[in-house]
Length: 456
Figure (spheres, rainbow, N blue to C red):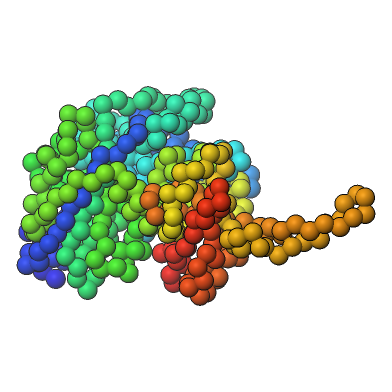
C-alpha cells in the first residue's frame, strides 16, 4: 500500500489512488434528540449512569465490582494521568488492541434501570469535535443522542441522579444527524482498518485525540470542518470489516440545522478517489444495521425489556465495562459477566413474507419465533379434565425466541442459545424451521450466524 495524499492516521500506510468506483451513501436520521451535559463532574456523573467506563478508574463500593480487591485498573497506566475535571479532554475508552485511549469521537453505550434492563442505548459525543475555544476547553462537555420518544424520560432520569454533581444538563436544540457509509475499492485487507480504525485507538493524550479528530474531519469535509459538531465512527462492525475487505465503513455525523443536506459539505479530498454520492432513505441504514445484527435507539426495541448482554454489548467495543464499579443496573450485569449464564442473544435474521407482520396488532410483546409445525398438525397431548375424561389438543413447544425489530426482509431476533447449533450448523434447507404465525399466515425466520460467533 502507498500513502494517501492526506493521511488520516498517525503514520500508517494508506491506499493508492489508482482504484475507482468508490461510493458514499448518506441519509438524514429521523427522530433523534440530544441532551448536553457540561461541567467539572461530567465524566464522573456519566460513569455512574452509562454501561461504558468513561474515567480510567473505578469507584470501589463494598462488593459491587467483579474484582473488589483491585484498586486500580492496570491498563489505565497506558494513558497518562490527566485532570478530567479541569479540561475538555474527550472520552476515555477502556479497551482496544492497542490498549486504553482517549478519543474525540462518539462512543456507543447504554443506560440501564435498577433491574439491569436497558432503558435506552445512546451515542456519547465529546463536543466540540475538533475546534476548541477557551470556553469549550475549560470543562468536559458531551452530547448524548437518543430517540425523541424517550429523551424526556432520560432527561428526568439525569436530573434525579444529579444531586450535588457539578454539571449542567439541558436539551440541545438545532442539531441534526446523518448516517454515512463510505465504500472504498477492496484490497487484500479492508483499508479502513490500518487507515482509520487502528490509528483511532493510538491517541493517548487529549492533544493527540484532538489532532486526529481534526485530520478525519478535514479528510471528509475539507473546508467545511466547522459545520461538524460531532462524529461517531461505527465500531460495532469492526469484526465484519476484518473478515470482509470490501465492507463499507459507517459514520454518524452531527451538524447544526443550517446544513440542509450533508452532501453540500462533503469534500473527501483526504481520500484519493472519485466518489459517486447517493442519497438513501433512512430505512436503508436501518436495514444495514439489522444485517450486522445490532439495534440503534429505542425505535428498535421496547425500553426496559432487554438485558444489555442479550444485545451483545459485551462483544461491542467499550459498550459495557466488566469492572468499572458502581452504576445503575450494574449488579445484574456484573453477575451475568461473572457466571456466564445467558439464555438468549440477539442475532440477524432474514424474513420471508415479512409483509404479513403488518397484521400484528399487539405492540406490547415481541412476536414469538416458533419451532413447532407451521400447520395445525402438531403432536397431540393428552389432557385429563376434572371429570375424569381425556381429551387431546396440540402440544405447543416453547418459543425459540422473539423478533425484536425488522425492516423489509431483514431483522434482528432474540434467539435462545440452545437453538444456536440447529440455527447455524444444521441443515439450512429445513424451510420453516423457525417461523412466526400471524393470523394464519406464516413468516419464515432464517437466522444468520452473527459476526461475534464466526470464530466460535
